[in-house]
Amino acid sequence: MGFLNCMMDEINQRVKFMQSQDYYFYLQPIEAMDGAWVTVGGRQMLMFASYSYLGLLGHPKINAAAQEAIERYGTGTHGVRILAGTLPLHEQLERAIAQFKHTDDAIVYSSGYVTNLTTVAALVGRNDVVLSDKLNHASIVDGCLLSHAKFVRFRHNDMDDLERRLQQAGDAARLVVTDAVFSMDGDIINLPELSRLCREYGVTLMVDEAHSVGVLGQTGQGIEEHFGLEDAIDLKMGTLSKTIPSVGGYIAGDKEVINYLKHHSRAFVFSAALPPAQVAAAQAALEVMQAEPERVQALQRNVEHFLTGLRTRGFDTLNSATPIVPIICGSDERAYQMARLCQERDIFVLPVVSPAVPPNMARLRANVMSSHTPEDIDRALDVFAEAGKTMGLVT
Ligand SMILES: *Cc1c(COP(=O)(O)O)cnc(C)c1O
Image 1 (cartoon, rainbow, N blue to C red):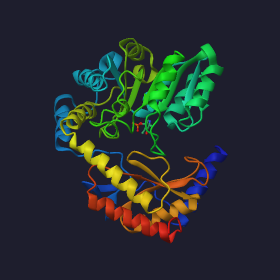
Image 2 (image 1 turned 90 degrees about the vertical axis):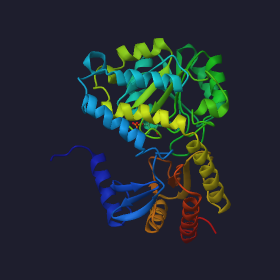
Image 3 (image 1 turned 90 degrees about the horizontal axis):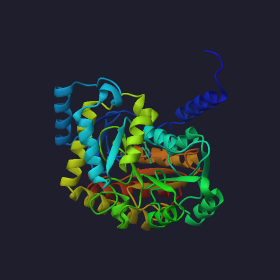
Image 4 (image 1 turned 30 degrees about the horizontal axis):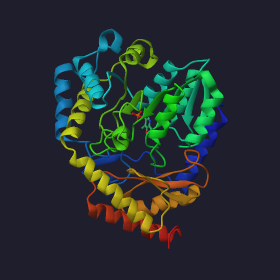
């Protein structure tokens, strides 16, 4: 194959180097699972890298719902939703999401990534300004770029900086978009102040709850419940692939916006409907989540246990207050070495390195689940502490 671009060479060389140093942790198949334990490369490992925060992946009621949907409707649909692709299941799921998020209506797309991409691109255009937190997920960034709006990034979770930028943008400011829980740092956006600013400046607020639903709030309803707010967010985005063990994404909001997206957002109009099994699974998962609130409580207890344990052992975990727990290592190399030490001792945890995070802020990103037992958490804390001592991260 001929020359494509230099990025391709660079990436391939980096992968080769990592493999030669035994630093390559990506693309490892998970061969089996049993609660918080998984089989990787034939070995039993304790999972600390999953987004299945409430341990719903493999839940019998959710599996049964997916199987029933296949029996009834098959494995695909008749195409795009707006033409022949809509099933009663899609309408039921959208109603269930709207009810769960306390909005008029909702729309589902085939992934969370695509949801952000197409929604932001449909909401703002050439003459508008879209304001986005510096640490927002790539799908939001890509949506802002695709929209051709003026793309303004404010300092991470810094409401004074946002206000200055809102003033600078003036009447062109249309949309503020942010993660509820930041996917690399695990901290929570200051929603009360953010919402107040958006109201004051007359700007629409869109919040990505990928790591908020099932995680935040007493019953796992998300960031509004966490802060005791209602109607603080205009557009509530979420994914169906994390706490909810399916695939897809959604926007919940006012009827007019949802109706507009159903007729104008390109990922809805030009891409096939979600398959029946995944829609039924998502719907069942929403029901299980609400019927078994003890999972949310167990998750929150585990987060507290794990974060306190790491902090008392001297680790830097930034401002995490959620099941996403960064363990700062420094250089990329040190993060790889930490990951290897932990994986050797059967903790399945993964490194995050630059450019996904700033240079010298490479880290392990450990994800807590409700299905971890207190003993699982203690065992992981012991492994992290010992690896951290070996690496000189803690004393
Ligand atoms: C995972 C994630 C997405 C993308 O969701 P998918 O369903 O995996 O495509 C979007 N935003 C955030 C913050 C995420 O963490």
